[in-house]
Length: 259
Ligand SMILES: [Zn+2]
Ligand SMILES: [Zn+2]
Image 1 (cartoon, rainbow, N blue to C red):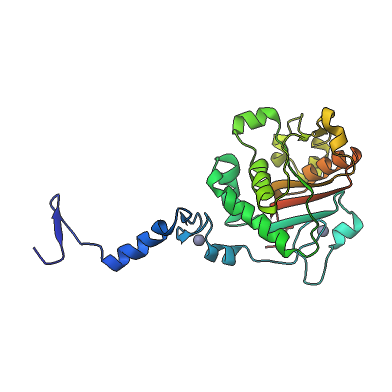
Image 2 (image 1 turned 30 degrees about the vertical axis):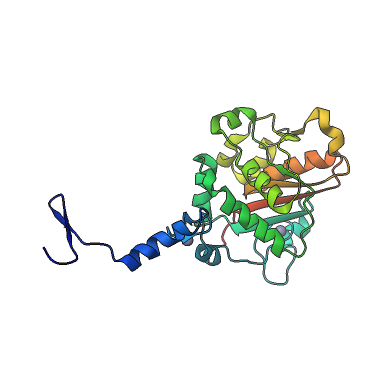
């Protein structure tokens, strides 16, 4: 038998060089926080490694009203100047494109809750970099209808909001804003039909109306597409007397036609 080879089950197995073994195992042994990157399969401190964050979570100037990308130096886009959304400010960490679209689908529909810290971190970083962002006040996850919540087993927005609350040291509440009406087929509707579909979808918990009055609130969600749901939820909160509403999402669907 050649030196350096071992014989196992009728096959010669080349021993793994010690240095290679060390390189492979060291990150795992370095601490219980090392994890396999969900994008490149390399080792990182979170489920999306530092290299992939640097590559895919590029910081771009965004409209402070709708969070779509804008040219440098522009703070509010033309569409928002003409038709301002009801919320005061919108914040998005990344565009809803590769790899975030795939990760958010796993997180939302396939209970990949191990992705929650890495996704929350994107939102945390985005608000930290945005000099115009206000303190969020109270974080409110975009609620799920109770039937949908039972089916899915988790509300992805709550998984983000509660972790963000810990990072920002501010409260998060999943029971103040409710979604009594199910509008889950929203994604199958044309953008123009979405606003009508979400009318009446949200309500403030009737016994806690006083907690909304004069309050600064931030809606947290995974993705903003047309913003119809966030707009309706914002209107309900403002009607109940909220002082200010912001909308923070991990990912923003880019403007049609942009890449
Ligand atoms: Zn990676
Ligand atoms: Zn805008």
